[in-house]
Length: 111
Image (cartoon, rainbow, N blue to C red; front, side, top):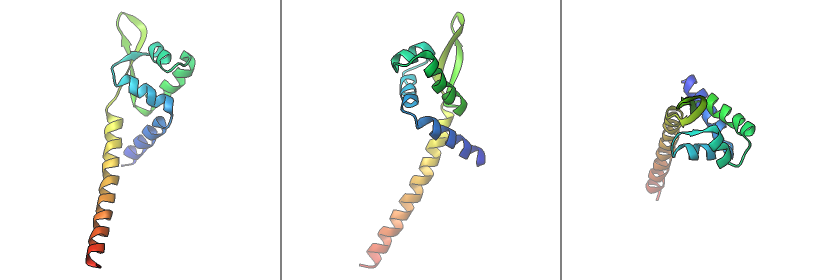
């Protein structure tokens, strides 16, 4: 369970930044090189590199060699961090559904 908590914490910390969320939105359309991502978010390559480092460290994205140029890195989304986050959110939602159901039952009984 602790690993899941650490993974969720890292995912939420990475998602807290609007630039990183924009990068994730861009990567939902498909793999992209860092230079293209930097241009799309109107940021210098070194500045975007820091954001990509956070996204890689959190496990949200991965970089793979792209094509004939081994120096070119294509960034892609990884599913696992989002799956873990969704599982946690489902647990929170189930808790609140149960709480609200209990409250509704209580109100109906005390009418």
